[in-house]
Structure formats: C-alpha cells, structure tokens
Length: 231
Image (tube, rainbow, N blue to C red; front, top):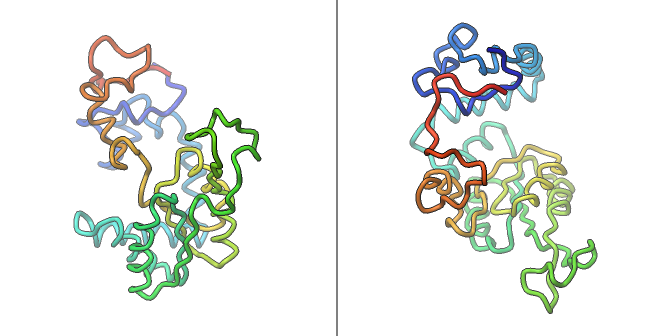
C-alpha cells in the first residue's frame, strides 16, 4: 500500500521503530522514513548550522540530566544556563500576571534579567481591527485586543534572547511565534475549562469530553490500528 503523507499518530505502540533505530526497515508504511526520506535528509542537513546544533545538544543534555526529575520551570532555567542566555522574556496573558511575577522572581534568583509583557499591552480597542461590539466577550464596554505582535516586538526590542509563553490564547500564541525574533518555549498552554491542562480533553475524549468529536466520529472508540490508514 502506498502512503502519501506521514501518519505517526497511527503507529502502534508495539512498533515505534524510530525508537529502536530501524524505522527504515521496520516502520509502518506511513512512517516518515518510508513516505518522505528526502525531506528527512534535507532536515538532517540543517543540524550542521552551529546555532541549531547547539540548541539540539543542550536540549538533549537537559532532557538526559533532568529526565523525570526536573519540572518544566527547572528545565527552562537549566536550558537557559547551558545556552548562556542573559535576558529572558515572558509573554503572558494578563490573567497570568501573578504567575508571571513568580516566574520572573525565580528566573532573577538564578541571575537572569527578565522582561515581561502582558497580552493587553497597548490597550487597543477591538473595534480598531474590525470587530463589532457583539463579538466581544462582554459587549457594551471597552474591551482591549490581545496584542501578541507587540509582545514579540517588545521582547525583541529589549534584548531578550529566549522567550517563555504563558497562557496566550489560541491564535494569539500563533502570532507570537510568527513574529518572535528569538527562540521561544511554552510554559503554559491556555485551557480555561481544564485548568490549563489541555491534554485532559484527549484523555477523556470518550467519556466526559466526548463533545470534542465531530460528525464523522467512528462508531466505536478509536483503537490504535496495526497498519494505520491510507492517506
């Protein structure tokens, strides 16, 4: 069977050949190593770039040293130290100011300079980008636009070498990543319903959060297939 696209999401737990170093021979038909080895080869060549290589090496060292020991906050600290970063930026939702305050203090306690910019900076009325009053969360009053582009530009303008995203809304985080000048990581992914634990919707997709399914939901709860699906 021929596959047009990689589909790692369908790889059975008994296979995962890339973990064993034999993806080319033992991977399923939809394995990236079989579907598109040319792109894999091109991507591998990019690791020759000194900056990319260094980030790759230090990331792997943090992974190994802190595996199942360090929290994400500790990993951010240790990665930043290994990379030799001096100034770290925090791009936070305005609802996370208190958490950003704690993170800023932690980073400063390790000797970093910290710049933080909240999403509502600039207090731009939503009407300025063509939204109507009815499209606000709370119609009838002033409601500022989330401003991730300015967050990215401000952190870059003030010399941040590494950015930490905390709770930006869907789409707003995408714009931040698009406009960010330096490396960026995510500390908090916003999910107001699940206490910012979005994976809960996947873990409970067949019970409490079955509403996440669309009209083409399989008749039976999905199970990992042996061969995957054809693309």
